[in-house]
Length: 370
Image (cartoon, rainbow, N blue to C red):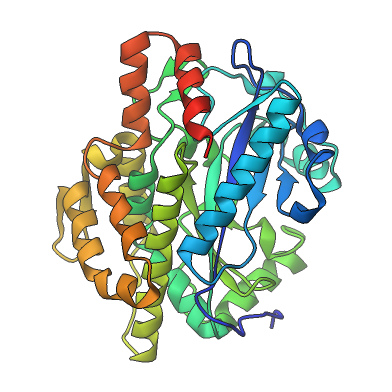
């Protein structure tokens, strides 16, 4: 079986954010990742990284004991990369898609993994001009990690709905709250993952793909939630990138509480329902289209319910977990995202106010600063 590091301590948390690099005039994407990386202070070594395209940078916390600690690290990282960018006449911004940029104008970073990825996937990789947030939660024990990932699987559409922040693509209002979602669907091994059940099954299936030459290792499985054996975490990857840092922190708190609750269910030997992938994926499409303003299918009740109602029910269920983890205030911050208050809706309001996508990006860049 695969080697792993699911050996604790449990429920430490790490967060990764993908930010865009902008020209200060016109707010076009700037191919400047290397100049920014060269100027990052040594104390942040390994926490500011390149991504597929030269107009993208990633910031990542270290493993943190609490959500509040992760939030402080993210705040310091955003502040640092913003300062470094501005010293070079650049800006940073955070949304799920750049409203009017074109992937044809972007350059791929000069890193072997990404160059090979583009060589293999071509257009599929080149058009992946999207920005997301990833939340890692440390889990103790490989079977428990699979149980937690399998459990989060059914909530992925709701997590996407809460985070929806990409209503524009290539200069067009798409009619979707998360335009990032269909762009990423073109990649292989993405979206709603299989229900694995046990570490043994997961290991066997990953090794089968590696033997067949489909993937080099498990990190080429880009599911919306996945075990991360090398880090000993369950990584939830479904989120659109948030503009305001407070919302990233609240979504991280939700993910941590959900993992904590599922871990307790694992201890009580509660059976986990294997919901069909097609049902969860149908809900995910609904979430991408309407965000928190539409309806999702409640599998328990067998009917459609408002996404806001479903979210409030989940928050009520997780209240005790939040209290135990000490992240109640951060979880309460999700109240802002319920109903018609997601990042996507705020973008649409700003666009209706100005009628100009460049002015929208000016607002986004300003709101991205911590």
